[in-house]
Length: 313
Image 1 (cartoon, one colour):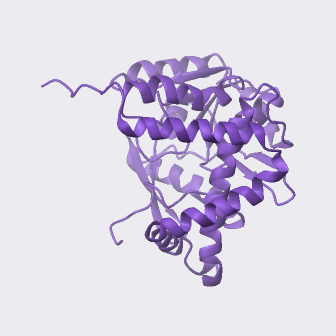
Image 2: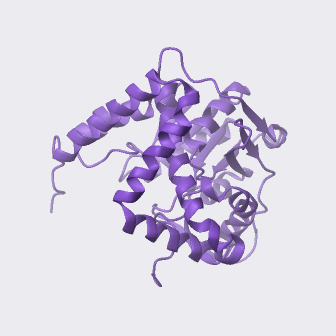
């Protein structure tokens, strides 16, 4: 039975085109100092319109963090995360302006990459899902002279039609392209070709990066504070297959306004036991590294999306 044919364009693509153009126009036209008050006012307006969704996000935040965040801060944390999410969009749009976007980005821990590459088998960067990570991590790595080969899906924010994939997504991704040595695109139905390409880069002693995700052919579960999240096992599988170090990466916007890309030492990957148990242990090692960053800046992590266990919701 053949797959249903993807439509050329959908009605919602028109709305998304308008929203994309509006965001680009505002990000290009407004001084960066105007962004915070404008975006905070915008977030207040949308939270009033989407009250049930906001309350659901607060509930999920409570489920994950438990008492680690005072109850009085739950609403404000979700508000701040929505603000950072929209701020990251403005940063993405300004990046593709002719004059670009020039934040202060500090890359910490690059010596861990240098030590990994000294082993001759490349290294795998497991990049956490901070809202600021997609642009800032790549931009910071490139500025630090680190040439990264990044695994990516064919489309990101826009899917569901030929127009979304081939018109909207390239605009969205343009801000990332100039900071990568290569964007390796995952082709659905061809995982072997993708795996071979990644392993060739590691065999050539290159840096491969994969963003933390939950949707993949292989997944495992790991504890994060009071909840379990789903983690795609692609980074773990690749590190095992290529005998390459697996380094967690955490990107955060600090209160002073600058960004930090934190590259941590390699995870300890178990060498004995069943595959599932080894992968689960590696995933838990990653979330253990993630927890201090997520607790220090809960307003910059999107744990209410597909990763969280909804069974008890």
